[in-house]
Image 1 (cartoon, rainbow, N blue to C red):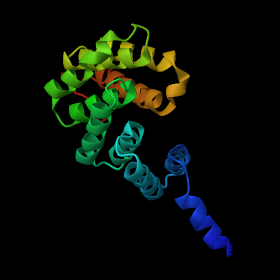
Image 2: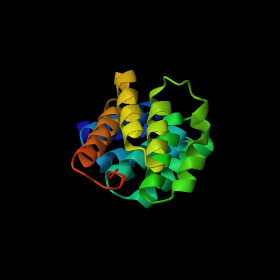
Image 3: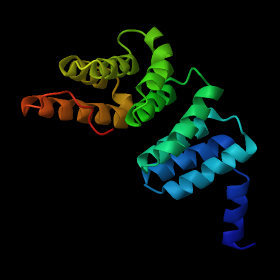
Image 4: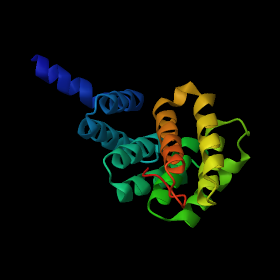
Length: 181
């Protein structure tokens, strides 16, 4: 049997968790098309896999396809309402699309998280921003980013947004505007 045939069998016989692991590796390497391919295979075998929908949503968001990202993240949250990261990211995407009321509804269950949970802090920061209180938003986003180093990319993004807000305040922005997400 040829080596390419062995590889083909290996890829078709992978378990769901192996496909998920390969998709995460592909994302880390910037190979989003391969990651999407793996995730579609996961969903063809396990259509209710919320983690696959969550990762697809994140990939589409990183590609600038907000509509598709919202669709995938919504599906993840419908399947697994307790997925706080997917719920938070869905709220961010809705906020980015100007759907503030919908974002707040999606984020409502996050209010029950402990006060020192990073996602709770991030949500509170964006709620402060929505209310026009940039200093409070900066404080909450920065505090949240310090609480859990395991949230690497999300922490970096929240710190970037806080820095953007700070820059705007220091350079005389007359009104608080949400930074580009």
